[in-house]
Image (cartoon, rainbow, N blue to C red; front, side, top):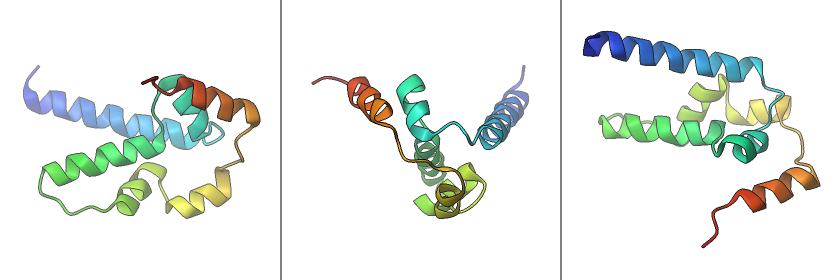
Length: 98
């Protein structure tokens, strides 16, 4: 496989991941963090970092809008639920120990 095809496949897989996350907006970020160690906000930070590494000026809100498919504040109002006591407990327990 040449580099261009590899890049195209990786980009398509990333778009598919975003579409999947959009379809599964019932899955809260804290659930993703507890189970996988990353969430939509992490993806936003990675997206921004990669843009900046390539000399593009992209702020965090712009990156989050790309990942969430809408402004973050709109997504929160539409989809985010308060974290349960158990979710918060699991989150604290999942943090690396010093």
